[in-house]
Image (cartoon, rainbow, N blue to C red; front, top):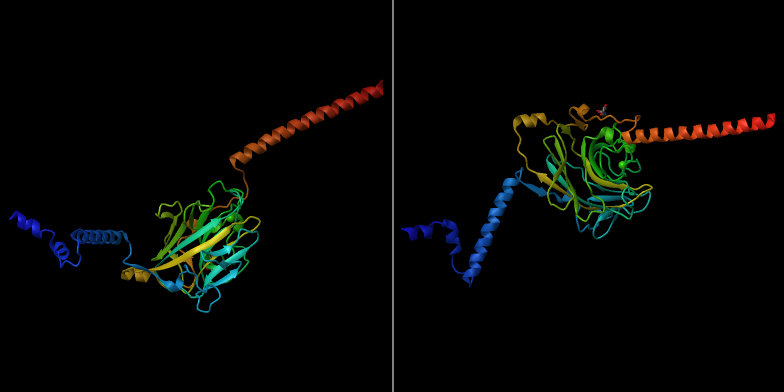
Length: 355
Ligand SMILES: *[C@@H]1O[C@H](CO)[C@@H](O)[C@H](O)[C@H]1NC(C)=O
Ligand SMILES: [Ca+2]
């Protein structure tokens, strides 16, 4: 009885493994079966971890190696602009030189509802830390191929989504965050990106990410589904996504264009896009969710006021206040000393005149 149980317990798998001996060596056959079993188990557990039923790469919205005909072939789905150029390993938006602007824009209006964009990029240059700039941006906007608007190689008052990888701190009071800083903004055609304050007034969310001159591959992921936008980064070589921003109630019209752009100023860096891979997500919706997600014509965020931050123009930080006070006291001291010396001389001169 016991022997019968051991013979039948592995069931179908064992039957499969003892099928006609195609393989000459028993050990190989067993090894193959073991490998097949491991693969099967791994794919099951991987499927369990997925939030979505399935996702697949959409070639027409993706930019990846080899960049055949990119920018000049009529078959290409992308256009280049400004200093952007294709090399075998990357699309270089700007070289590490001053005052350059470059971009790459999709030619095809984007119409998918649930998606994920994975961007592999690289920012590197000769400049010392904090002597580099300005960063790059990823777009999904109504407008495309716009130039020189002072927003990281794109126009201002854009309509749609902008994800900024800002490598240079412009604002005077930047102690609240470390740079490089990744952030999200939703433009509606009238909102302006405030370059001098690194986009703080219109920022919906963001995080610091050490993406410059990194020894690791740097990635960011934008996921959009059911009016919810999630931004994640993978920049420390751990192959895991760290959440950077999570915005609900974000309504994005369809028919917009993907793009990536960059600009350098007095300070520069190489800004490279290695790939932009767009995955379609398969998501189930309830009837209420369908109702909730009506088509929109202007991008908007529910309860916009919660994101509004005060940009302080006046006032000083503690350190600034301390030094201002210190120098004021020192300055006053010097004035008093100079005053005394002058008074002394004047008194001596007066005496000389008297005698
Ligand atoms: C864009 O958003 C701002 C701030 O929420 C709002 O004041 C403005 O009216 C909006 N513009 C359009 C065209 O909807
Ligand atoms: Ca900046």
